[in-house]
Length: 250
Image (cartoon, rainbow, N blue to C red; front, side):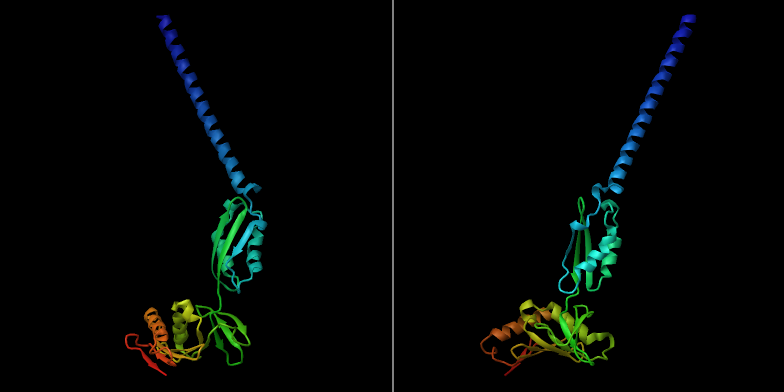
C-alpha cells in the first residue's frame, strides 16, 4: 500500500512539472511574439528604414497652371515620416488647396518615395472682362488666370454677365468639352445668349449655329460631314441645332 501512494504522488508531481513546462513555453512564445511585433512596429512606424525622403518625391500632371514647388512645400513638413504612418488622405486634402489643382492622388513609392499626381485647372476659354483683358476659365468655369488678350488657340467666349446660374456659360463649356479635339481646335469665338443658343465662329470664318449642349456628338459628326461634302464644303454658315435637318448657307 505505501508503494501505491508513493507512485501516485510521483505521477502527480510529474504532471505538475509537465504543466509548468508547457506554461513556460507558452509564456516564452507569447513574449517572443510580442517582441517580434514590437520590433516590426518600431521598424515600420518609428525607424528611418521606410522614412519619406523629399529627394524621392515626384509631382506629375501639374500642367501650365500648378506650381510644382507649391505642391512640394505641402509635402515638405512630412520629410522623415515613415511611409506606413503617413496619412495620404489628409495630405491629398492639403494638396487640393494648392491654387490651380482640380484633383489629386497621393501614392506611396516604397521604400522612401511618394508620387503626387495632380489634375490642373487648365484654361479652356477666355472671357472678356468689363474692366479690360480676359479671364481664363477651366472646364468647370473656375477662373485660373487673367490676361490682357486671349492666348493663341483659346476660344473667346461671349455670354451674358447677368445670366442666372451661369447657364449659358455652362452650356458653352459642356459643348467644348464634348467636341472632338480636331473640331475644338478650329473654334475662334463662341457666343450664347442662353443655354439653348450656342454659336461658334470657326478660324476660317465659318459661322455655326449649335443650339443647346444636347446631342453634341451627333451635331459634331453632322458638321464635319457638311464641311467635307462637295455640295456644302464652301458654305459660310452651318446650322446643326436640329442635326437631322441641318441647314447651310453660302
